[in-house]
Image (cartoon, rainbow, N blue to C red; front, side, top):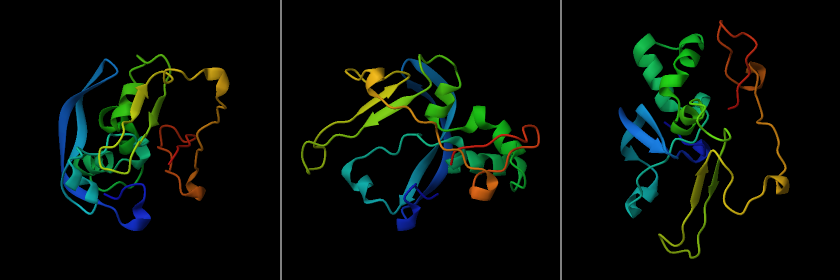
Length: 165
């Protein structure tokens, strides 16, 4: 699988495994993840644990691999979309539980030094970070891409659907 910066060729491979994940007090059973055993990403040399499932379902290589293993080559998006509740990335599945105050998350990557481990980040799920007021934000919709723009084709059971990349 290639990461979001796939133009640089950063990639990883490994088997897809399942475990229970708990975030923001919400547990998701049978969450798929890739147990990476080979990567071109040098950060693994610095005791990093991996990449947390932040992508949209349409960008999940693990989701795609599981659907292909179940249903064969993906010709239409029907099987892919219908398995989203089971195979989507962690935060997408958490949002689908309807247990969050708001269906959102935010990430702050903070470094106080250029040294490895210098600084900390913050992940908030279902709410805004402490000290951030909703009135100080400008909300914009997520960009959706139709198939002509490189987006995922809609499934037969929802022909008018449009998805983010």
